[in-house]
Length: 129
Image (cartoon, rainbow, N blue to C red; front, side):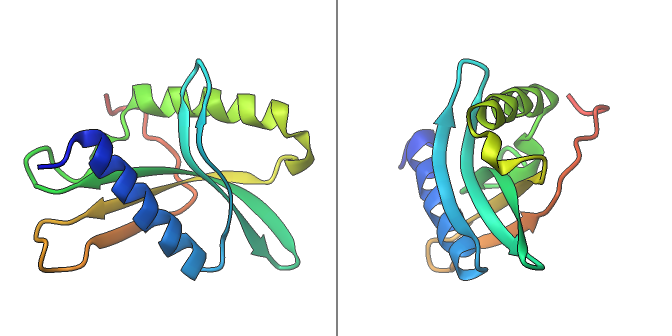
């Protein structure tokens, strides 16, 4: 059985490949700050302009803990926003055009490809803990 870290890295690889197929460019991976971490930072061309997308990847190999996207808690969201602020301070050339996406990957059977759900431009519901 794989560790949580190995499953997470596997999910990030799947998400990166998925985004590349959709035309996104990978800008950075696993951006760490004292405030938090961002799994993937990608760039998407939109109408001759672009948008920076901060991607949180959640991966599950069983239904024991619910759907992957349910793991984006208020605490995780707050840490992500702090990390995003830090990234944008360090990279001012990206300006104000950015959003947060969540990619949920679930693989319940090794005989089938993983299910990938892409939630674009996510806004956190602060009623969740």
